[in-house]
Structure formats: structure tokens, C-alpha cells
Image (tube, rainbow, N blue to C red; front, side, top):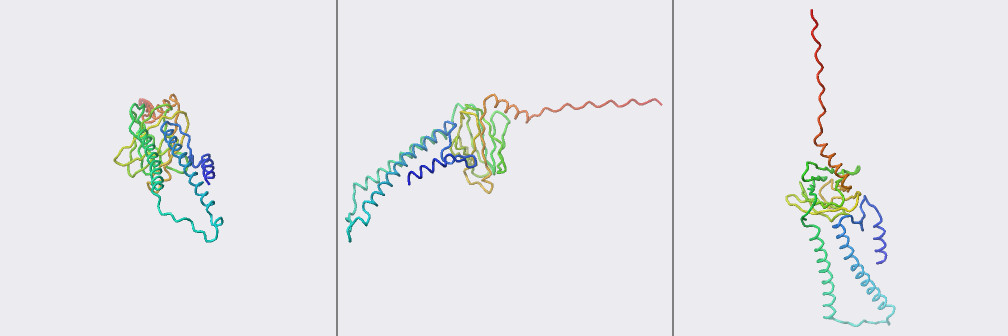
Length: 261
């Protein structure tokens, strides 16, 4: 059974459901890598414990099955075992506390406001889409939700530490791109923070992870990372689009001179 579960997980990890890898996304940002490492660090001991418990259960079922016992056999009636009960209470408690502490360290590292960022982008969630305001510029990328095609990508340069400030304008939304970071809620009246530093050019997909209304499924997320030179060109194009150069007005043609009578 355990082998079947592991095999199924590996096979699912190679699938591509709507652009998302459901089990093992390949991390492209350090905080995504931290979450991946935490996932593996918890999953491996969990699988080992699961397999050990299943083997012990199977051994008891086979070793003490009724067909191997004499007719009328009644097993020993034992009431309580203080030492054993303490052990099987303390060991699971230690395991759960270790998982909680390990997870807490990752959350503290990846979901606190950072310093030393090279860019600040305010991410606003609304029904049903996202707005990305690049601080220090007038540029805002509007990522309106749709299932008819790809949404407008949120563009960042590679190898750049980008601080993300999340806000909600109506209800709670949750920004989630598995390869980049964990789920971060966009809450009305309260700012949450995360960050990214994508190591390679490419495009990564995500989605809103908080049920937020009838159009929740439309809230795609696309993050595109490009090299710095291409990013500078992209940003210059966005700024130029906000302030188009007015075309020169045509000079009025001189009125024809009045002919003498």
C-alpha cells in the first residue's frame, strides 16, 4: 500500500494540471525552495512511520489470525500497560512538536517583511483578479481573471529581491504560485508580506487559493521572469504607454487671398 502511494505521488508530480504541478513543483525562488525542503523533511519521516505502522499491523493480523489458533482459543486478557501507554503517547507528541517547530521556522523566514529589497510591488486582490503596483513608478499591471486564455503576466527581473506587499480590496484572497512561494492572504485592512527572487527566466503559474466568490476559479496568476535588460525595456514601454507623446498638430492651411473685384 505504501509503495502504491509513493508511486502515485511520483506519477502525479509529472502531470500538468492547468499549469500547476500538484505534488512536487520545481522551486525557482529561495522561499519556494524552503517550502519544498520542509515538505520533503516532513514527508520522509511520515512515510517511514506509516510503513512501520502498516507492517506492524499486518504482522499482528497474520501472526494472530483465528485460523492459526486452536478451537475455542481466547487470547490473554490484559488490562492496561502504563509504560507502553506512556511511550505511544510521548513519541507521537515529540514527532508532532518537531513538525510544528520545523514548519514555524520556515514560516518565520519566508512570511515576514524583509529588508534590503531591490523592488517593492504592492499586490492587490479583488473580485476577480490581481493588480500589481510597482512602487516608485506609475506602472500597474492589471491581471483580470479569465478562463478563456492567459492573463497578463506579472513581470519581474531575474536574480532580483522583490518584496511583495499584499492587500485585499473586498474579500480575502490568497496569492499562490507553488514554484515561487507559499500561499499569502490578501486581507482587507491588513497588509501581509512575502518576497521572491527568481533564479532563471521563465513563466510560472498559480491561482487564488481562497474561495472568494463566484468567479474564484477565474483568478489565474502568471509570473514571468526576464533578464534585467529585457525588464528595463519592458518597464520603459509601460511608462511610455502611460504618457504617450502627442502627435504634432497639422498647421492650418492659409486661407486663399480674396481676389480683387
